[in-house]
Image 1 (cartoon, rainbow, N blue to C red):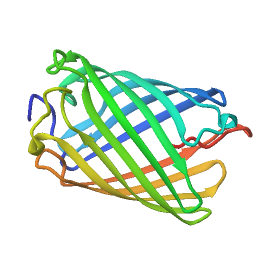
Image 2 (image 1 turned 180 degrees about the vertical axis):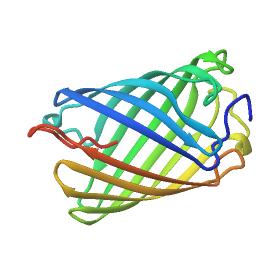
Image 3 (image 1 turned 135 degrees about the vertical axis):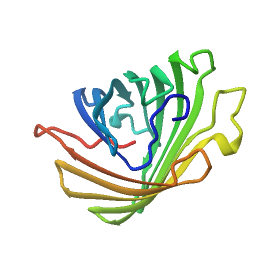
Length: 209
């Protein structure tokens, strides 16, 4: 184990997300994390809460802009930091031929090995080409550069790129599948992810980012 954290090799991680929209520009999400891994029992990892606000579409801004703040706890066996927060600005644009988003994320530990460090800069971005009204094919990037002002050496940074497929076969259902590859020694070599989403209520709206 590195820093007392269980290895991620051959691990299956499940996240249950429940999000409630209070208005067309505000929502609150709740996350429940679990882990299944050979040699370990199925374990509860932690829980996070995430409020989010966005610019109203009727303002007709050239970019979609929203801001979410995520706060939560994760058990020490699964993270070097148990209490953390994340500030995630989201800038996105849906063109006729493609969708683009950029998230310059700032993360901070309140309890754990990195609690005395500055905010961590963890950018992510996505570009997806609209192959049809219901099918997008794209690429996603996720990184963690280290504390602002004392950047971690590149080989110790977490950086990964994914090939991703998005399907919207029904207005109430989301489907995302991706395969990712680590770009540095500190990142898992190969990762697969699968996301299913369902919207309850006739007025549910799709939220990107």
